[in-house]
Amino acid sequence: MITKKSARAISAAILLMLFFGSAALGEQENDYFNRGYERHLQGDLRTAVKEYSRAIDNNPRFAMAYQMRGAAWQGMKQFDKAIRDYSMVILFGESHFQAVGYYNRGIVKNMSGDFIGAIPDFTQAVTLDRKMAAAFFHRGIAKNRTGDSFGRIQDFREAARLGYIKAEEWLNTYYPSWKEHATGAPVQ
Image 1 (tube, rainbow, N blue to C red):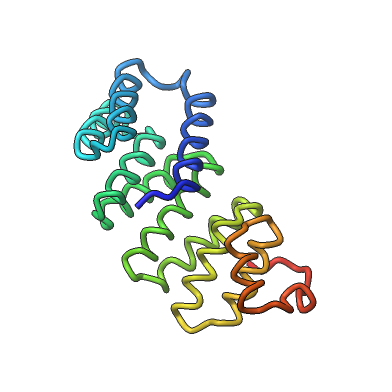
Image 2 (cartoon, rainbow, N blue to C red):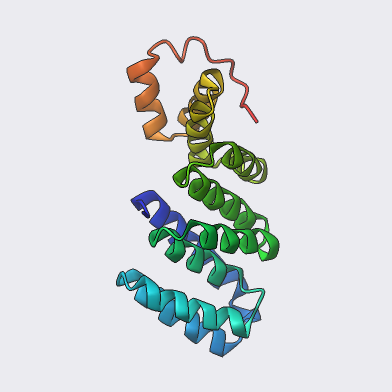
């Protein structure tokens, strides 16, 4: 399921990719991608996947097409396929897109119950983008699911420090003295 925050992140990634990468893209793969994106917004994920796949067939290094096809697979709960596509984003994307690819792959691993596998992906995302508060938060969730309660609190603190409201709300509810015990140093 794509949340509002995920949809905003995907939209921002699309705009950046189109702005920075549109000159390198051929017209045909852009047409397929745009049709896929339109179908994606309409909720027709199966057709969106077909159009994104056509774009990829025309340009096998089209990171944004992999990103969006991964999001469609994720929406259809085809987690293995989403993970493969997010891996291609990591392979072909610029560093910002790699961070998004690691983050999204971590999300899918969390969704599929692979919490141990999600932690390194979120770690890579925050290594590439130290301000990616959502990655700290979701890594905290994965750490909690693997029994690392202290790691969860540290990651939630960092997410809250970066302005992630859900993390701050959780900390205020379940650990009200969290600000007093904060070390000030972000956790990797």
